[in-house]
Amino acid sequence: PTELRKLVPVTNQTELSLEVVTLAETLADAGYTTGHAGKWHLGGEGFLPQDQGFTWSIAGDEQGSPPGYFYPYERGQHFLRDLEEGKEGEYLADRLVEESIRFIERQTDTPFFLYLSHYSVHTPIQGKPELAARYVDKAAADGQDNPTYAAMVQSVDEGVGRIIDTLDQLGLAENTVVIFYSDNGGFGPATSMLPLRGSKGMLYEGGIRVPLIVRWPGYVEPGSVTNEPVIGTDFYPTLAEIAGANLESDHILDGTSFLPVLRETGEIQARDLVWHFPAYLEADRSVSGPWRTTPASAIRRGAYKLIYFFEDGRSELYDLTEDVSESNDLSLKMPEVTDELDAALQAWWEG
Image 1: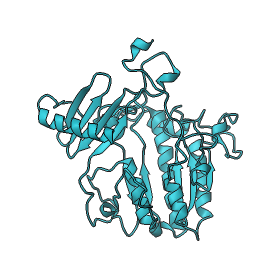
Image 2: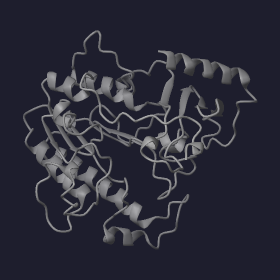
Image 3: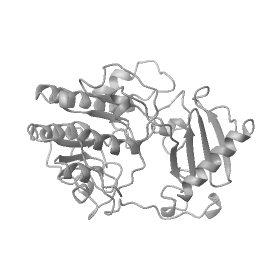
Image 4: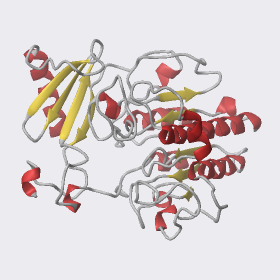
């Protein structure tokens, strides 16, 4: 079995160290009530949201996916903890939204930070049958031909709408920033990311380019669009700046605040974006392949993106402005750019 992989697998780190000062802890210190609902996936007992700065949390544990999306959610499973009894047939995405709305309603006179982390659209692929039926006869577009997956997306979309309606009804909208995004691209076997290449678990754009929508009445113009690339680590400094939270001088963050972009008062200073996953995901737990990820790193500088594969020391180079589908590897045609980004990536590894 070991010949199926070229590198020795290592045990994956599954807990977020308690030494890390989380965004929730920073905002709590700034006077915010902090809440979490849904997927956590950063550790179990001793490493739960309540251990990392959240004063309220439901349904989160070390697991990354639920046993099912319909109540009773196989309630013997411990990671849907603190989720009180529901109704037969209740859908998990709806329940998380309802609990989140109750949290918001309790904070009408208090600054709050809510992290609603939907399990959808993670496996198992289970959507409401009545919603899936709407998509059965619709023509497939760019390979998206899974009615059940579409139903799951619609449930998340409707839930976002309910959250926004709640903020409007409570008179909180103009003083509340709503950020919607995903932590990775779609699940390849269930959907398609076309025209992007790849899917979840890959460093091609289909695995890392995701929607980012911000609603902030009075500050972000509705319908406005920017091509400024941001990365997940940018949320911490951005939200800390919006909240007026103080960061200790020795508190080093990987991200950059994109508040100037939101307010259209400036741009983010030119910087490299780096994605780093030098391991096989959970390969230490199994002797069979194929593995869910291939050890790789990627760096983007301006229009150019380089992907480095650790198994064979190979690099691929793409111009995302001209080739968002990453179909034309330029590494041999543009050796100077390839060498420059290879060196920058190695410097990042070294610290």
